[in-house]
Image 1 (tube, rainbow, N blue to C red):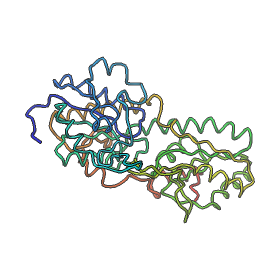
Image 2: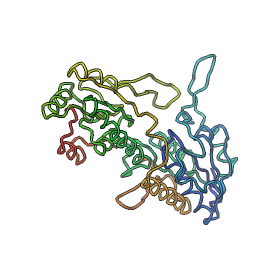
Image 3: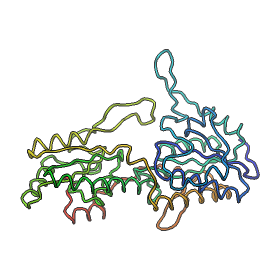
Image 4: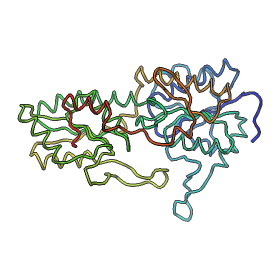
Length: 365
């Protein structure tokens, strides 16, 4: 694919699940682009729109007033991987490679670069497109915070806020009824949301994928609290948590997704087992998509804006195949292929876990 001398038109898309801060990034891209003399083409519905040819020009007016708005004005999809495209053939789903259709649209739209905002799956797609000649810049988004190359991804702080405030509210009802309340949170194979949300919300027990738990240890913690006169307990459990020697709890699979496993249900499993072992009335709350919705926190608004503006700088400098990343207090860039080399998981021996244990939180280990 021939490279043009000047960058005149860039595409921007939001891939994967939505989260607070996406619109702030789009705004952070579109406003500085004008100063560089670039026009911005908004690709609709993530990579689905990239393959199916759905896009529109973004003006300054389109991005005005969207800083605090949740979701994404462009739409998103976590089933639109061009390299893993589901097609119904004779009543059955068949997976095909539609990357050439995406490349065709990239050329027909006259794009000189693509800024793709998304998580681990999006960055894997970006890496493959980069090797096909697309000038790509990645912006790390995921409430799970599981991308190794950046200190934090935008959307995570907003999700943690939802978990913490939910635990605050559940604390009063748990205390009033002398119950154990179990809160199931997202995060897939990483425990960052459960750890940070549970720590901020005063959970008594936090169960995460990185630390397989013992049912006996969980019950013991609740009994110990009883002996101290504390007749209630709050349990924050990550959807990917599992007991020692046990399996992930799933609610099905979807072949249309690159990762077909659909996690969910561990909260009820934990609640039922606690009630069986302790005899205490136990209830479960699944926060689900509440963690993805609503307005971004001030921290996420600032981080998203920085990410978007820095992405445009990288485009202007023609530093492609890069992902923007937070390193300390500065926004840097890393190679996309390095960013996806491994997941960022909670260190069971790390400071965050140690601090949680120091204030009496049990991880069931």
